[in-house]
Length: 233
Image (tube, rainbow, N blue to C red; front, side, top):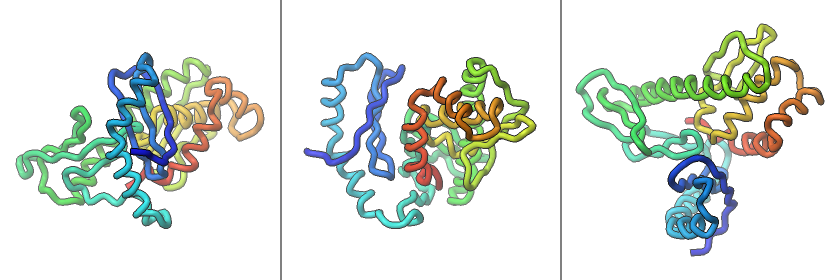
C-alpha cells in the first residue's frame, strides 16, 4: 500500500517500534537506536493499512480548528496522546470505589467510578496533571544542571494560550497539556523557560543560549506551532 504522508523518524532508547499519526497528518516513527532503517521500514509497511485508515479519518475531519481537534467522549477504546504516543482508554470495575486512573503498557485505565463522561474527564485530567508534574520536573532538573539556572518554583497549571512562562520572581509555569507532546518538544519548552531565567526577553542572546543546548530548536518550535493546537481535549 502506497502512503502519501509526511514521515519523521525519531530514535531513542526504547525496545520496540512505535507509530503515531498526528492530527496535522504527520506520521512519527519512534524506533530503537540500533534498529536498521531496513527493519524500520519493513515494520512500517506492515502497519500501512492502519496508517492509511488514520490518515483517511483525518482527511474527513478537515476543517477549522474546532472541527479538526479531537473531541473525546471518554468511552473505552478512545485514543489519547501522551509523550508523543497514543494510549487507548480502558475502564474497569465501574461503581466499585472512588475512580482512579493509571498507565498500563499502552493503555490508560480508569478503575472504578460511575461511568459518566464528566467524571472520567476529571479523573483523566488529574492523572495528566500529575504525570506532567513528574515528567517536566525531571526534565527541568536535567537541563537546569546544564544551563546553571534554577527556578524558585515550578507550577503545572491550566494555560489557554501558553505552553510555558517565566516570571521576574524566577517562577516557571507549564501547561499540563504539554505532556501530550513528544519528549523532544517538552524539552524545547523546558529549555526555553529555563533560558528565560538568564534572559527575560526574546533577544539574540536568549536564542543563542537556547541553541547552545538545543541546536535544532527551530524545528521543535515549528512543530509546536503547527501541532500544538491538537494537544487538547
